Each structure stands twice: as C-alpha cells, then as structure tokens.
Length: 238
Image (cartoon, rainbow, N blue to C red; front, side, top):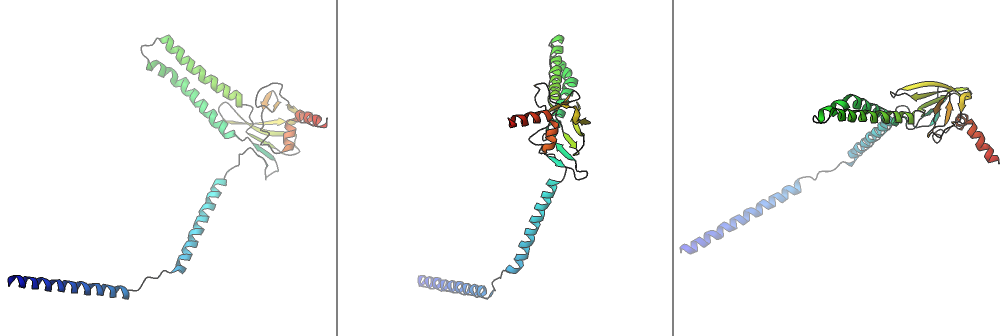
C-alpha cells in the first residue's frame, strides 16, 4: 500500500510541473508577440553620414593647407610676384646646412672634450701617447669639416635675377652655416679653368654652382654659362 501511494504522489507532482512550464512558456510567447518590433529610421541616419563625410573632407583640406604653407624651396626657378624677378633655390640647400651644422658640432666636441676623454679613460697610458691620440682626433675632425666646406662652398642656395638687369644676387653659405648675400655681374662670369667638381662658373676669383636640371629658366642659365652655350650652338651648326 505504501508503495502504491508513493507512486501516485510522484505522478501527480510531475503533472503539476509540466502544466506550470507549459503555462509559463505560453505567457512568454504572448508577451513577445505583443511587444512591438523596434523600427530603424533610415531617414535620420542619412544626415549623420553626410555630416561625417563633410567632416572628413574638411580635415583632409585642412591637412593639405598645412602642408602647402611656407616657401617652396624645391630648386625651381620661379618668378617673384612682387617685381617679376626670377628666383632660383638650391634643391639640397637644407640638407647641406644640416650636414654642415652636424660637422661643426662634432668638430667642436672633439676639440673641447677629446683631450679630456683621452686623458681620463686610460690612466696607465703614457702621456705622449695620449697627446698623440687626442691630436689625431682633433686633426681628423678639423680636416673633415674643412673638406666639407671646400666641397660645398660653390653651391648657390638662392639666386635672384630681374630680367633685363646686368647683375644678380646670390646667397652663399659661410663656415658657420650662415647665409652670405652677394651681388655678381654677368660681365664678371668666366668658365672655370679647373676640374673641380660641382662648379658652373667663376666670378671674382670665386666658384659657383647652379643645378642646371632644376633651373628651368633657359635665359638665366644661358647667361650664367655664356661661353659654354656659344660652344654648344657652334657644334650644333656644324
């Protein structure tokens, strides 16, 4: 009897649990059916996308304006808007200045700190040997600095010429990497009588170099090398 009562109790409890789960699932389905589906307003998303595109275009235009600000030193011979002058900029002027400043700084450091470091690093070394090492370091640094200045001293960093004028202005670089203005007359220009590299013409016992590939004003280039232009025209006529 007790066993039959226990089986009857278990069956009744299982029926109650199944009925409860069915009713709860049915209520959830009804709630899901009653709740409205959210609608996406595509008309409101279009102005946001347009505003984002405008913002991106404005940022790109601002970056382009930032890049284009400042003087153009690309080695081109351009006309000045103020007086119609032709202005030529050396294409590697900024690079030469940076290299010269670096060479000068290393030369100053080697002269000032070279002997101190040499005498402090090896206390057991002979004083004569230390002096020879320090002198060698100073000599090598000074030699390289002087060779660099000799090599790039003819380079014209800026040239300004007004068409019809018999002279032009140039900017050269000194030992201390500063620009020195000079005025040169076309009548003083001569072809260099030496095999020194990077020399275009000679004037007043000084050598000057102009990058012919970046000087697109043919009239100016012809006046800077008059004899060479005459020789080339003679060979063409032959």
